[in-house]
Image 1 (cartoon, each protein chain N blue to C red):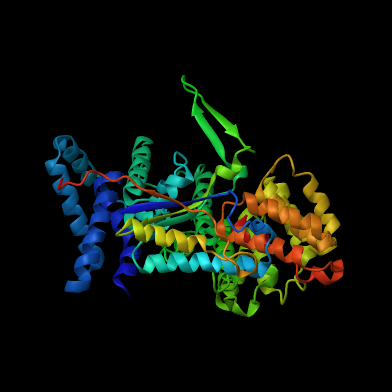
Image 2 (tube, one colour):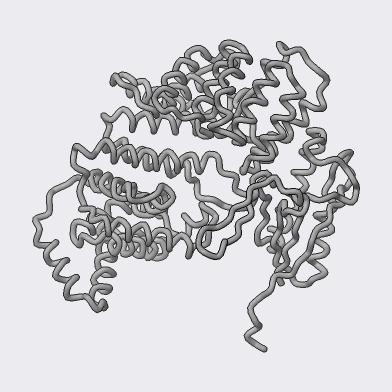
Length: 423
Length: 133
C-alpha cells in the first residue's frame, strides 16, 4: 500500500486513540495532522515502521505533550489530561471511533462548507494543502476555515461518543448530507486545465464506505453509497476529450464502469428491501434504472417518473420537479413535461437549470426557435464553465440545423440534469 | 512582473456576431484555442490564473450605505458591455511579453475561423516595494 493511502486509512484510528487519551478535539486533530505530515516525509525515506498506527500515535502524543508543556495554561490542561487518563477507557472497536469522528465533523453547529473540509482532514486524513487545492483556495484560507470549525465544535461541548439514540437519526442525516454535497462538488466541478485537484468524489465514496461498514444495516447509508457508485460509474462517458460535457442521452454506454454498476445495484436492491425508502434510496433506484438501460430511449421512463413522483412528495424540492418533468417528457411526450415546468417559474425564477430543461423539452417538441432562446438564456446564467460551453453549443447546433420533424429529434435529445450528481 | 489581461463584453474589432450565434464547430474551435493558450502559458510557467466570469445577468453592485445595511443593485445594467467577462493573470519577464500574450488572446478564432480581434486590456499588477531599493 502506498504511504499516502495507508496514512489516510490510519488517520481516524489515530485521532480516535488520541481523543480517548486527551479528549481535546482541536488539539488532538492538529497533533495528528503533524504526525501524518512527519510520516509522509520520513517513511518513504526510512521505511515503514512495524506498527504504523503505534508510530503515529506516539509521535502525535509527543507533539501534544510538548505543546501542553509549553503552554501557559499547562497546569490546567495537564489536570484535564490526567483526569481523562484516569477515566477507564471503554473498549471500543476502531470503526466506532471513525463513526464518532464523522458525527463530530458533521455537527449541526457547522455549515456544510466548514464540515466538509474538517471531515476530509480529521476522518479522510487529507492535508490542509490538498484540501485547499481541491477547493481552489489558498492554504492559509483553508487552515483558517478548519480551525474555526474546530473552535465551534469545542464550544458546542460535544463529548467524544456517539450521539444518544434519540438524536442519532437526525445527526446521521447531517452526516449523509455532508457526504452527498462533497460527492457533488467533485462530480460537477469545473477545474481549469492543468490544475490538479484531489478527487473529491473518490474521497466521498471512501468516507461513505467507512460509514457503511460501521452501519451496514442502515438503508439510507446504503442508498447514499449506491447513489454515489451508480453516478460515478458514468463518469468515464460524461465528458469528451476536451473536457466538454456529454449529456446522458449521448453517452457511450460501453464506457460506463460495469463493476461499479453491479456493486451499486446490489447495494440499492438490498437497501430497498427494508421497507420505507428514503431520499437517497429513491435517487439510487433512479440511477440504477438509468445504468441498467441499454439506451436512453430503452430506459424504463414510466418507472423513473413514478420514483420522481415519490421523491417530489417527500422533499418538495423544485429541482426534483425539474427532473420529474424530464422523465414525464420521455414517458408521455414533451408537452407533459413542459406543463410541469409552468408551476416552477416563481420558485426557480432565473435559475439556469429551469431554462436548460425547458430548452431540451421545447427542442423535443420541435420548437427550435424557442428552444434556442432558452439554451442561450441558460448559458448566460450558469456558473459552470463546462456547462456554459455545452449550452452555447447546443443553441448553436439548433440555430444552424434546418427544421426537423419532432419525431426525428426525440432520440437525440438528452438532458444532463438526469445525472443524479447535478441535482 | 505580473499583468492582468482583461476582457469585457464590448464590441470586438472584427465586428463579428456574439458567440451564441456562431456554429457549433466555430464555438468548439474557439474554446479549444483558449484551452491551448492556457496550457501553453502554464507550460512556460507564466500562467497564474485564468477565469471566465458568470454572465452580467447575475452581476450585482454593492455599496455600503454608511450605516450598516448595504445597498445591492441587481441587473440588468445599461452598461453591461463594460463589465468584465474574464481575465488571465500572467507572471512574465517583461511588459513586451504581456503584450505578446494579449495579442495571441485577441487573435482567438471566431466565425469562419477568422480572428475576432477582441480588445484585451493589459494592466500591470502593483507589487510590494522591492526590498533592494
